[in-house]
Length: 175
Image 1 (cartoon, rainbow, N blue to C red):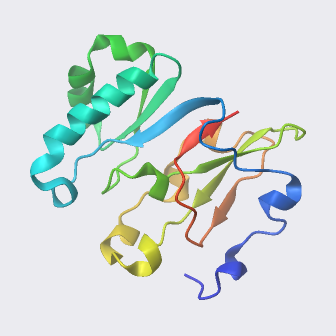
Image 2: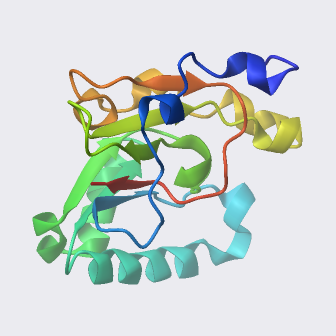
């Protein structure tokens, strides 16, 4: 990683092109989660975390799409059983393995510019584990190329890959 975070900012920066990160409460197309699975993170609380997240997925599904990152096909099958067939109407599964559940740390941040040809774009960040505080995290996060392109980068929209640590906001697809 560069020692000077400003050196990693693309030119022109998204803000210079009129893109803004909307507030968390703004209308949006969906919410992204990476399903909790790491026993080192969750210890004896993994089942409780899964139950709580399942309730959140069902509540969110009443009004929006919920995107779930899973490890592999077996993990997806287990979650389909846990969430039930009703969730198939609003859950989209993505096989993007991670070592942690905090999608805001390893997923994209969506930015909007209603006046642009592509009003929705994604900034794909390379999470630095709070300045390398947790080195194993930095080597096991999905690379920007792991994220699905149809939403991560509309055909005519810029996609930025910044190397600086990003703000602590949730990863939601905003429109």
